[in-house]
Length: 526
Ligand SMILES: Cc1cc2nc3c(=O)[nH]c(=O)nc-3n(C[C@H](O)[C@H](O)[C@H](O)COP(=O)(O)OP(=O)(O)OC[C@H]3O[C@@H](n4cnc5c(N)ncnc54)[C@H](O)[C@@H]3O)c2cc1C
Image (tube, rainbow, N blue to C red; front, side, top):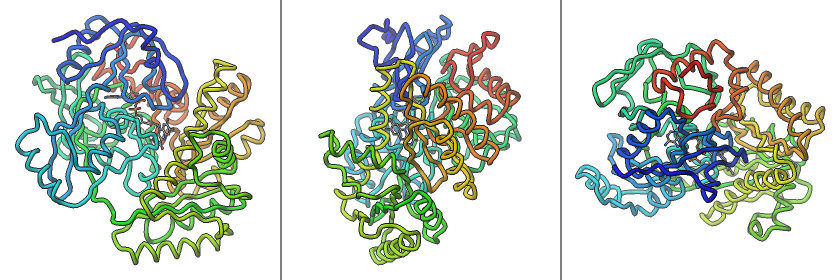
C-alpha cells in the first residue's frame, strides 16, 4: 500500500479548523482514496498510539473534526459513487464513498449523470432503469452544501427539509466502516439488532465485537446528542451520529426519494416575534405536513438587510420588507397543482389570522425563485459565520456560539421566552433562526469581546439545563463534537457518560479516534 501519511505543514493549516472557528493542532495528515488505504492508515496510527481525527467537508460547527493532536484523516478524496440499487418499493439508492460532497450528489442525481466506472452488473442495470424513470432527490439538506455525506452521517445532520423527511439516519440503508485497528464491519438496515442493551457485532475477519449500550432514554425531539441507543435497536444506527468516535465510515448506501412535482417556497413576514411563532404552531398543526418551516428573528433579518446593501456577494437576496420583525419560510411539496394551490391559499388565511403582513409575502413557484429563497436561508448562518471570523481577529478566544437545542412541541413558547429573558439579562447581541417546525431554533450569541464570549457560554449552559428539564436535546443536528461536550454531560449525567466511554472502548480501546468529541479524553481509558 502506498503510504498516505505525511507531516502536516503550514499549507495544511485549513485542516486544523472547521466552521466553528475553533483551531486545533496535529502533526500528520493523510488523504486515503480507498477503504483499503483507510485500513492501512488507521492500523498504522493504532500501532503508533497516534490520535486520529476524521474529516469530511469541515463544515461542522461543533469542532468535531478539529484535531487535538496526532493525525488528521481527510476522507475528501474518497468521492466516488460506487453503485446503485433499485429498491423493492420502486425507489433507488446510491452507494457512495464518504467524501462525496452533498452539492455534487445533488447534481449527479438531478442530472442522472453518475460516473459508473467500476460498477457491478446489478448497479449498471439499476442505473439504466433510473435514467429512464422519473425524478429523484436526496432529501437531507444541512444548508451548507459543501458538507460530505460521511460527515453528515457522522453528525446525523438534518436541515430544513428534515421537518418532513427526517434526518440522515432515516436515509441510510447500509454502511461499511473501519475500526481503529483496521478491522472492517458491514451493516445493512434490518439485519442485525441488539438484544435488549447487549450487542454482538461480527467484523469481516470473523472476530466479534461484544458490548453493552448505555441505558439512557433519548428525548422524543429531533436529537443527535451522543450515541443513538435504545433496547433491541438496529446496530447500524449506532454509527449514525457517532461523531467520528467509533469508526471511519467508508461507504454509505443512501435512499433517494421521488421528487415532488411541485416545490414552492413562501416567505411570510410579521411585525412581531410572538405572531410569527403563533403562525409556526398553526402551520405545524395543519393536516397536510409542510416540507419545511423555518424561522428568522428581527436581528437575523437586519443582518440580511445589511448584507444585501453592502456586500455584492449578497446583492441577489430577496429584499427584506421594512417593518418586518420576524419571518417564517414555509416550503410546500406536492404532486398535484390543485392541492398545492389550495395549501397556499390556506397558508394565506393562516398568515392573516396570525397578524402577518400579507402584502410583503414572497411566493416562489419556479426553480429560480425557490433557489433565491433558499439563498435567503443560507445567507443568515453564512453571514453570522463571517461576522464571528471578523470578531475572532480582534479577540482570538471567540468561536461560534450557536445553540442547537430542540424541545417538545408544547414547549416552543416557553423556550423562546427562556432565550429572550436570558439574552436581555446578559445584555448580549444575538441572531435567532432555525427549524421552528421542529421547535429547534439556533440562538447565535454574537460576542463583541472575550467577556461577552465567556458570559455567552455561561448562558448557554443555563439553557442546556433548562432544555433538558423540558425533555429536549442539547444537540439536534450539528452533533456534540468538542464544543458541546459539557452540555452532553448536563443532559445525560456522569453515569451515562461513563457508559458511553465504555461503549467507545469496544471499538477503540486505546481512545485514539475523535479524541475529546462527546466527552473529554481520559488517560486511564488507554
Ligand atoms: C452555514 C452553515 C449552515 C449549516 N446548517 C446546518 C443545518 O441546517 N443542519 C445541519 O444538520 N447542519 C448544518 N450545518 C453543519 C454542517 O454542515 C453539518 O454538521 C455537516 O453534516 C458536517 O459535514 P462535514 O462533511 O463538513 O463534516 P466535518 O465537519 O468534516 O466533520 C463532522 C464530524 O463528522 C466526523 N466525520 C467526518 N467524516 C467522517 C467519516 N467518514 N466517518 C466517521 N466520522 C466522520 C468528524 O470527525 C466530525 O466529528 C451548517 C454549517 C454551516 C457552515
